[in-house]
Structure formats: structure tokens, C-alpha cells
Length: 217
DNA sequence: TACGAACCTGGTATTACATCA
DNA sequence: GTTGATGTAATACCAGGTTCG
Image 1 (cartoon, chains in turn red, blue, yellow):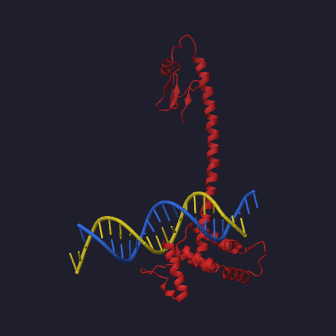
Image 2 (image 1 turned 135 degrees about the vertical axis):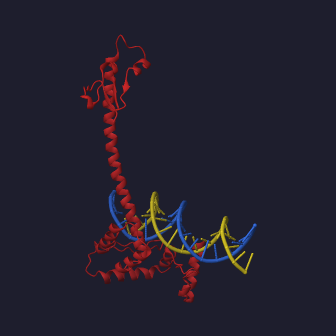
Image 3 (image 1 turned 45 degrees about the vertical axis):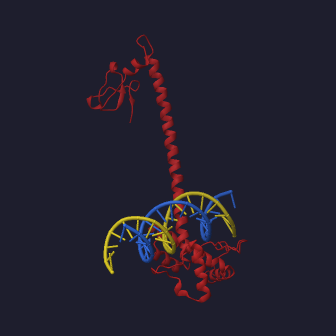
């Protein structure tokens, strides 16, 4: 795979000290996030030392609650640290301006916050995911309210329909088709009305009957 | 247990390069 | 030899899901 190829080339660079090779023919950096990960994993012990040192040097007064640094996990994976409040705040500010970040902004922000650009990138990805999740929850609540309201309305209309049917049952009642034919939808006001009871538009001075009209809108 | 940082996977877009008609 | 179309590899980025401290 390309990943293996790139990783092996990086190893080659490290062995030969050919830092300049870490560029491909089109002057694009060859080191991508996965290569960076491979690099970190290879230097795991040293990375732990450096991270601990970095945090303590940068935030000597920070409390332990604010910064947590894990030790090596069993797979030798990267540590997970809590970002400081300052770092989080600045990332939040940047996110408020734009919820995506380009390479230059990412690197600038990373440098400013003393983080790796990959950390900034991941933070923005996670932040977008959290925003979307929140929005989904909000939408869910809204849709549930709509559902409840429509359910309520549906029950009301069903009840009203039953009442209308009860009124309709009598000597003149013959069949379903004749029943349907007795009701008309007014094209102007979109109400269902009984022709034999008469119907007036609101503009006409409207005689409304909640029993004999059904609003469609 | 919830939260969040880091990671993994699969997808898409872009770019450079190679090949072929 | 030049040119345009096409395929391929590499890279970057993202969303969605998962792991783990």
C-alpha cells in the first residue's frame, strides 16, 4: 500500500538523514497524517517525555484537573491529553469564525497554540461532529413536538369526522359514494363544506360553522 | 458514566504523470 | 513530435464511527 511505501520512505529518510526527500515531485509534503502517526508511534517513549515536559513547561501553574496526561497504552499508541482552557477557547473562537480550517490557518493556529497541526485538524473534525450531533438532537426534539401536535390534530379531526358522520346518518344516507359527493372543497378558502348548508367566503361576510367546515391548512 | 482527544475507515476532489490514439 | 483523452497513483480533506483515558 501507499501507506507502507510512505512509511518506509520516511524510515529511510530518518536513517539517511535525507530530510529534503520528504517532498514528492510536485513539491507537496509527503508526510501526511498517517505518516505522522507512524513517526509518533516509532518514537513513543520519547514522545511521552516530550509531551510531559512541554505541558509542564508551558503551564507550570495549571492544576492537575485541567491537564491530564496518560502514560503509554498497551499498544504503544499515542497519549491523549486534555487541551488547556486557553487552547480550547482559542480553538472555539476560530471555530466560531469558520467551522472549517485551511492548511495555512491550521498550521498558524497549531503554532500559536503549541499543538501539532494534526491535533488542530482533529479538534475541528470532532467539533463539527459535536455540532452536528447537537443540531440533530434539537431537530429531534422539534420533530417530536411536531409529531405530537399533528397527532393531536389528527385525533381531533377523526373525532370531528365521526361527529359529522353521525350527523349524516339518517333517511337520506345511502352509500359511501353519495356521502363523498355531499362534501365539497372550496377552491378559494380550502375548506370542506356541505353544499346544502351554504358556504360563504370570509370576504363575503362569512357564516362559519365549526361543525360543517374542515380547514385543510 | 459522560466527555473529548485520537484514531480508523471509506469516500471524494485535486493534481501530476504515463500511456495511447 | 505534438496534442487531447484517459487511467492511475499520491495526497488532502472530510464524515461517521470507534477506542480509550
